[in-house]
Image (cartoon, rainbow, N blue to C red; front, side, top):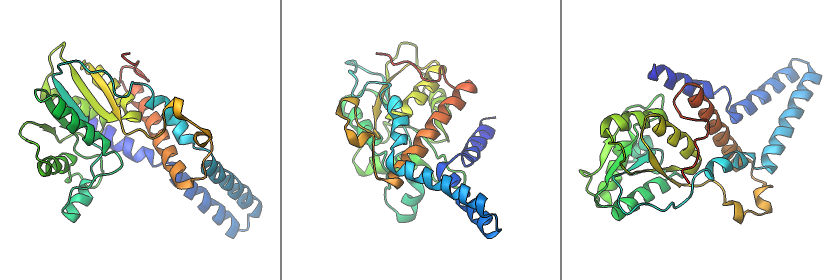
Amino acid sequence: MDTFFFWISKLGWYAFRPDILLVGFLLAGLICLYAGARKKALAILTVLTLFMVGITVFPAGKWLLSPLESRFSTNPELPENIDGIIVLAGAEDSYKGVLWGQVALNSAADRLHYFMALMRQYPDAVPVFSGGTGSLVTQGYKSSDMARQMFLELGFDVDRIRFESASRNTYENGKFSYDMIKPAPGQQWVLVTTAWHMPRAVGVFEKLGWKVIPFPVDHAGYPLDARSVFSFFSLNFTGNLDALQTGLHEWTGLAVYYLTGKTTALLPPSPG
């Protein structure tokens, strides 16, 4: 069932991705134009143009991500002693890294930075790296392998780190990590992942009965008290489109996870 969910969720998203929808509208407009249906073509291409202008001017994606990023406190006050630190994969480009023979990271590298910082701050805590790959076609290239290589190159004792390398999505991150660690009630565990991804991750862990302390990183936008006119207007088509896709994808994921019983709530409440 988990494999069916993984494939359906990956393939189903392609039907809703804004970039693919824009290309679909463009092709539909051109087909109508060359078929002689000029009025239909004009209507479709007009709608397409308006959407593209709207995406260029308004950073709607960041508006969608903002309530997710502010759900949990950034730089939370941590207890003096913690039992473990979990970081979710997502910062690694394992396929590119294998091809080039070097560690390859993406814009979510903040996850690994703060994971390593917390490992140094809490040398007695158990560090857990959770993540295989979410790719449909390159399942042989694991994020955990890329992370292990990076930790080795930076001088960390990788024998201290527990690597979970089978998970393909957030639900499996939580489930497989729980099965591997078997945390005891009352233990203090810190969870590190991207800020807009944290609500879904916390919901999954809490559904499994694993209470975690959220440590959100890798923010897409600015804090509420630091916003300016640039938070509401932006001439950046590619950046706004990317943020819109991320926002729609995450809210869709939250809804699907909640409806399929994989999280405790659509938006888990902040512990603070």
